[in-house]
Amino acid sequence: MGKKLISQRRGKGSNTYKAKSHTSKAKGERPRREEIGTVIDIENDPGRTAPIAKIEFEDGEEEYILAPEGVSVGDKIDLSREAPLEPGNCLPMKEIPEGVPIYNIEITPGDGGRIARSSGTYGFIVAQERDKVQVYLPSKKIKEFNNECKAHIGKVAGAGRTDKRFKKAGEKYHKKKGRGKLYPKVSAVAMNAVDHPFGGSASPGKPKTTSRDSSPGRKVGSIKASRTGNKDN
Figure 1 (cartoon, rainbow, N blue to C red):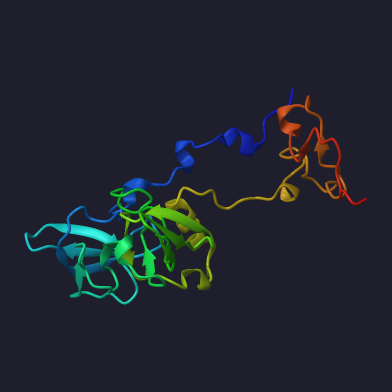
Figure 2: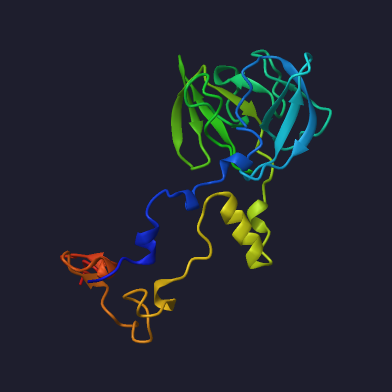
């Protein structure tokens, strides 16, 4: 009787491969209050790619937001509906002109922000309608939102993060671990024959099509393929 492959034995969503959310400092959503706060610190959050800004309000309460480019300690962040168009301020999208970069965009009014939250990302409004706005997203798609949805002005800080190369395998290991990713990954052809059907020295040229009734350890590649190759041939 065959055995399952290591990727099959891992399963889906086990605790080993879930992101360590308890290490995150804050959700990074838009604070619910509509006041003016002061940036008192810019901090790193292990659970995300962008830095976060700690804001202190007049009553002494502190909140976190995703830090935009150009904001430093001591700057004011206005979360009211009449805020000026300055980096970090939050406004309903009906109050934001077309072409102004925005980030942390709400999908539904009041959800705190769900889109354009990674380092260096942003979108911008391309059209205003009666009660809708069309936004050009980082995915290069145009999506329609309720014009009462809020967004922050500017771009998420940390652009160019991916330009820095990993100098050691340990750096990449800890990056993947913080986000619940498996690292390192071993390719099938680099495994031994006992661990994977594509492994072993005789693996090159071996067909990857397998039967539907084959054992779990053989079900890799094209399972019960009716045909393979280019359709032009």
